[in-house]
Amino acid sequence: MELALLRIFKTITEERSLSAAADRLTYAQSNISARLKVLETELDCRLFTRSKRGMFLTESGEKLLPHALEMLEREAEIRSDMKREDLPGHVKLGVPDTFLRTYLKQVLDQWIADLRKNRLLSRNCRQSHRSCD
Amino acid sequence: MELALLRIFKTITEERSLSAAADRLTYAQSNISARLKVLETELDCRLFTRSKRGMFLTESGEKLLPHALEMLEREAEIRSDMKREDLPGHVKLGVPDTFLRTYLKQVLDQWIADLRKNRLLSRNCRQSHRSCD
DNA sequence: TAAAAATACTCCATAGGTATTTTAT
DNA sequence: ATAAAATACCTATGGAGTATTTTTA
Image (cartoon, rainbow over all chains, first blue to last red; front, side, top):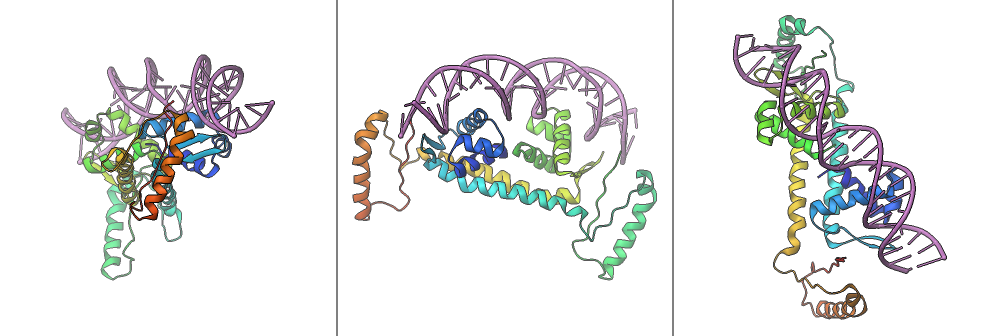
C-alpha cells in the first residue's frame, strides 16, 4: 500500500469529488480516478459510492479513514523527527574518514565516556557517523 | 514515502545485511541497495553505517525504526479490518440496482428503524451499498 | 583476498497526462 | 443538458534485474 494513495483517498473524502481532489493535489482527474481504483482493487472493496452529488464513503471507506489519517500524520512526524539533526545542541565535525578511524574516534569516545562518568552529558546525547565519499 | 521502503528498512535492521534482506524479501541485492538509497535521500540522512560486519543503525535510523514498525503494523491492521465484510453477522443481498432504489431501500430502512427503536439491533450494525455494474 | 555493498546498464511496469466517452441528475 | 467519473491511449519515470566494480576487515 502506498501512502500516496492514502493521501489521495483522504483528499477525496474532504473534497467529495475526484475533480476537486485532483485540482487540490495538482493531478489530472483521470489519474485520481485510476489511483483510487488501484486502492480499491488492492483492498478489494469499494471505498466510495459515486453520484453526481459527490463521492461518499462506504462502510469500508469509513473503516479506512481513521487509519489513513493516522498513517499520514505519522509520516509527517517521521519527516520532522528526521530533521532534528541540524538543531541547536548538535555538533558536526567534517574530517577525512581515515583520520576519524585512526585517531579522532578514540579521542571522542574517551571524552564522551568521561563526560558521562561525571554526569555532564544528557542521557540522549549520541554520536553518529556519515561517510561523505 | 512508500511503505515498501519501510519494509525493506525493517528487514535490513533485522538481517544487518543488504544481501540477507534481499534474500528474505526475494529481491536482488542491488535493488535493496538502491531502494535504501532512495529512502536515505528522501529523508536526507544516512540510516545505516556500512561495514563488512554488517549494517548498523545510525542515530537517525534508530529514530526511524519505531515509526516504521508502527506504520507496517497499521498497514496489516487495515488489511484485516477491510476483510470483516464477509464475517458471520454480515448479510449480503444481491439485487438489481433499480430494485434497490425503487423498492428495497425503503423497506430495509423502515425495518432497521423499527429494530433500532426496539433495541433489537446492536449499535454498530450498518448498511452499505456497492453497485455491481 | 573474500564477502558484502555500490555502480552501470537494461528492461518493463505503471504513474501520470490528454482526449474522449459514459453516467447520472 | 451538463457536470463529473470512467475509459482509451500514450509517454516517461523509476523499480527491478544481471553483471561488474569497489570497498573493508
